[in-house]
Image (cartoon, rainbow, N blue to C red; front, top):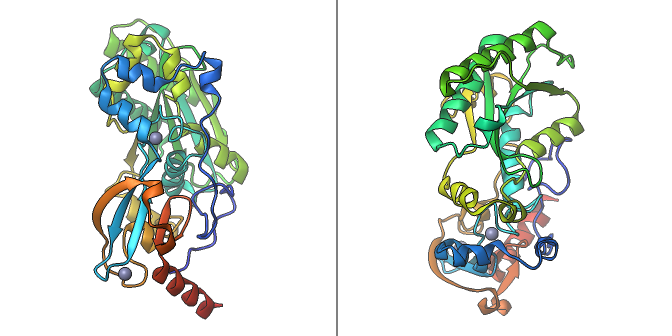
Length: 347
Ligand SMILES: [Zn+2]
Ligand SMILES: [Zn+2]
């Protein structure tokens, strides 16, 4: 199976790495030095979050061993996937790139993208809002956008923190496509005014406030680099190790309590039930990158599903029997030989 050529807007560091290209994992950023050698891992252990602490401590150091029905061996590096992990929460980490690519799948076909940032007064944005409240606010941000700009679908991403060291600051990024704009992504002043007003009314109702207007910002992207920047920015790691260390203990616990919350939700034609049909209508590829079989845990040689065997440290992998597929996957020599042969056949 061939990987399709990557669209122009994607940076080279995105997920589209071809195999045999081995890069070293990102090192732990200089956070600990800035903050006097403190690590969030230590805080987790001291506050009783032992499981999370252990996951962080072992992140990227172990592999899962899987085999196919014919006994070919594969080893997959294990990441903890936590945003506050110095490895998983780094910019351009696997998780950051995956979020960006997933979002890009929804938008890449459209010429112009609009982006509304819905903020709330400080007294609300710094509250520890429950999951149900965040969900409701995401719904409302979508409804305002849909009602006033007549958009068909959007992704609404919640950001929980403000700029460095400012603590909790919940706000919502609404990203949508603007059909028929042809590089003119501008919206009229009266429309933006109406958006601010309706958002204020909804917040008043929700939190018993008395706002006349609110701060809602609008920007758009119509060129490749700007679009890429927008996606990368909206989906960047926010509750990183450094950000977590700067929060007070109650806020740290609050962020940890939101575990499992989907920070981006999709609405209208971009909702999970409609997006495939919608993309088809616009001749857009369903995904930007065809996932190689090996990453779907299927043996590329035998085409059978892999089965989990056991887990071990990286230095326990029998290195003479495997070849590195990429930074995170080791595969059987026989499968590597087969793939090389297949590649030669294609060229
Ligand atoms: Zn991790
Ligand atoms: Zn096999």
